[in-house]
Length: 64
Image 1 (tube, rainbow, N blue to C red):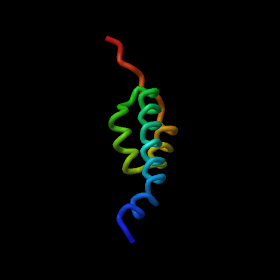
Image 2: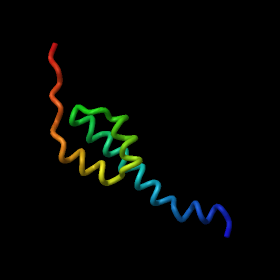
Image 3: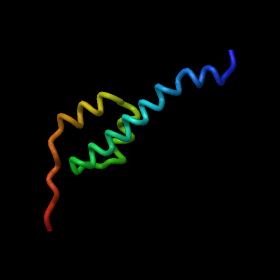
Image 4: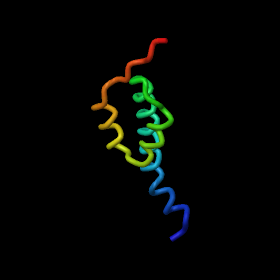
């Protein structure tokens, strides 16, 4: 077994997980939350982060 076949078998999984993290970052920004923070959390939590984002309310922006 070579290393390339091992990596290639997991490539779609990594691409899907990374795409989900990007979607979660955009969703977080739409709710006035940190896109970078949620991107990183999504890399760790995956679909659970999506569920949390959907359930969390939108943060009100502060008016100065």
